[in-house]
Length: 417
Image 1 (cartoon, rainbow, N blue to C red):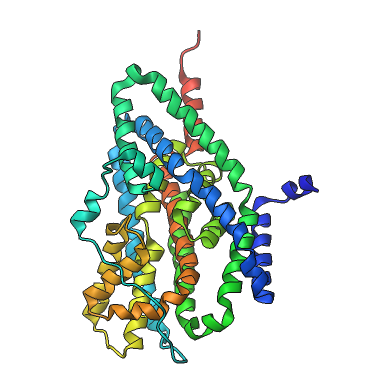
Image 2 (cartoon, rainbow, N blue to C red):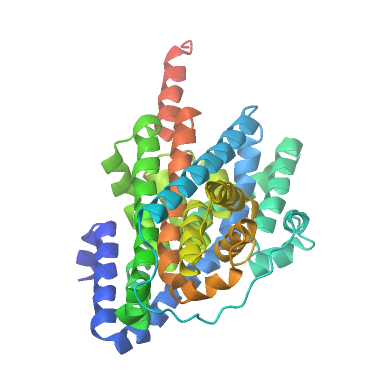
């Protein structure tokens, strides 16, 4: 029986669990809510891996790629493409919001919402630097872990043979973490079943229908962005068929959708990007943790644009053309500038509303369904991380197929004997 289970393709197991969990939550809400511990089990197992996986992966990526003279160029292109897709995401979000009448069909009651304080830019950048790296690892402060890991990796690269033993130790640690990741990811169908049963059982249709247009707008914009922007990048610059690409990443998209966590999905994102998209692990270990931190097309581009228009219509406030430009610009910058801030999607929306002059209190009306829209936002973010990694890797010759072909060519051209 167990052998037959593992003979089923992984994506089919995950999709089946997704559908069964959704049906259970809708048909038997109490049972769906009771299934939440299954989802929490999966999330905790993933969270167990995130901090050490990011640390060893970034360290190995830095001492491997740090010796490459083109590393600065690769990093710059990666961040530049993050910014470009964030700009396109805000455009799509605004277009969808303007084409749809988002005014609610029934009276909405504000949900409980505690306004978050938006920290100054100087504090955001200072928070990159850990005062205690061990505390950052224990508490899962991802930006600080990345910062310290970059320094450690560069130091190992500079010292060279003096620390060869330490270098091999980190490489061995990376392999251990990858093996643990493979084991934990086998729990994915169980986790997806529990999470979807809880979401549908806890929220139900009664709470979702009054905000149906808003939810539909978010999901539609995310779909358009994923299919046309990411699909277009893959088709023209990624060197893969669009259908082939989405089939390869589908299980990871489902994990991102159900967990609503880019960091929580990171082990699966790394595995899919290296094994199914054939991106060099050295580059993927750099680009994916960075993307999980600052590539926020769903949270920073689509969501603030649509939510700003929705809140303006809710309060009967007319927006000018200049306001729309402010929404696009602020959403794009916020997607990169609020990296690592807790509750980043709400902070990004708060920044956008403040710049345009819309009431921050409007967030209270959509707080109740934040989890529902966060699922689509996260799936969009994670898809963007994998897409950009594939595109940059192909452009820079960092695909495994290209590396193997190059190695074979070098072997054939070497003098014999």
